[in-house]
Image (cartoon, rainbow, N blue to C red; front, side, top):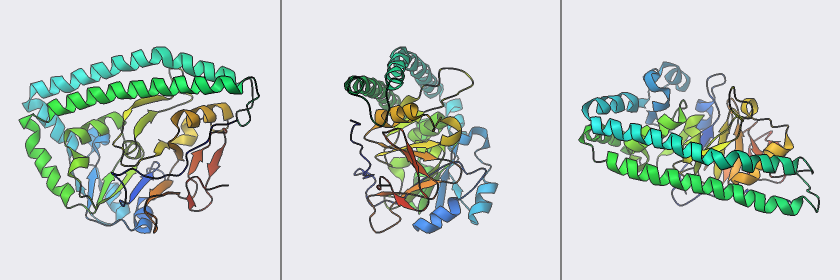
Length: 338
């Protein structure tokens, strides 16, 4: 028996009634303008692009694609300036970085062993229909992996909460936090660009972006910008230049896109033809629906009358617990029977 799969795509309290779009990479095949129009997401458009780091101000291509101006929060230079004025703040954030790296090392001690065991077990049977000998062994193996992921995420959450609570006391952040808060309060749609997912998350926490956002504003995030909106940020690459290629929980996201795990660049970073790997990733992250987002693809909440469900755009997919990957040929409700 394959475990039952939660594919309802229902959202949590923080995002009910809000239009949200998670998109794949936009560099090669920009589709953001079409997604915004199709979902009825309107301006003023406020952009957070801290994941671009030093290139955050380079918004010309984006504005050309949208055909309108965007209001850039400028979180990257604002943070660098705050670090220069407040050495204690800089040291606090660098200390967090060091502790995050050590937590990751501790997590990996067990992670590689748990994943190796599951791959071995699934290599002895059919992922979509485990036999009566291997099947019962899969349940506790997946439970152990989920418990490990949850424990690591909880430790990172505790570190984040402690760090960002202390950072909020820095006077060096106040002026820019207030400035950004005014822009966010008047936003019609918040745009969240990709880039470095860890830096993007950190700068958004430092400047309280989600807390300051207009409650009725729509949100569209692409690539790393889609990842930070979910409940948990998952780092993944089946064939990295270095390392074992084990997907890992980086830490919590903002939870606005509840019930969804976003995997941009899925086709180039995942062996989607490997049923065992797909089954492990999908079942491991349950009850979240694991969505594969390649260039120009999207999953959208609130684009129709039922604002509590997610809809896959053409070409986007979701990873099933039986090891298969469904690709939408047209707009499709997440989890629709196919």
